[in-house]
Length: 166
Image 1 (cartoon, rainbow, N blue to C red):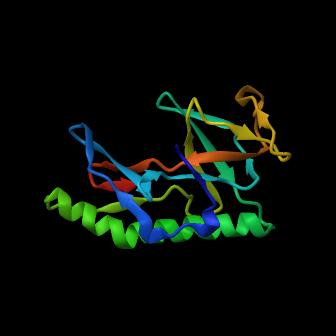
Image 2: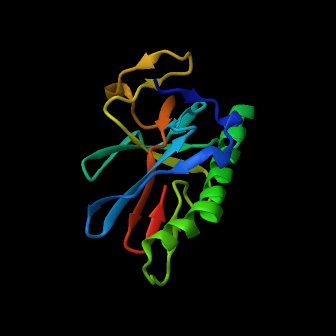
Image 3: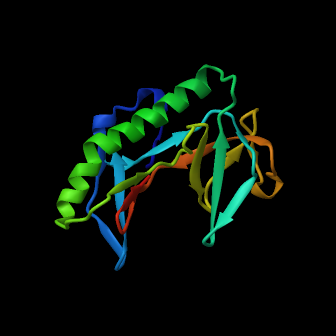
């Protein structure tokens, strides 16, 4: 059974990279787990300035952190920054070393925009979105400027040519 973890209690050193899975010649997925289980967290209430975004036949949500954040929003933003820093420092070099390729200009693609005010994640068909009262809402009712909470399955890292992303 999958657990939804409280992001405030995550021990970053318990995140594990599973064996790489080649999707095609240039693209690989590196599944990640937390205590040998899927890495699932719930976001605090965040704004969707663009509504649901469609790209490459997938649905994404771009969740914006408000300028004036409450404690949960601030803690979630700090958690995401620490998570990306941890991946960049501890996982990034090991992954490239495992590939045994001499790749120049290796880059890390953040799931947050450069100002760290928007977090992007994929919304799966099975994902549930909640309103500010913690009631599930229909995805078709989510528009621009909606405020939602979401369950995020942080399923893995992706590797494309010289870029590693989360």
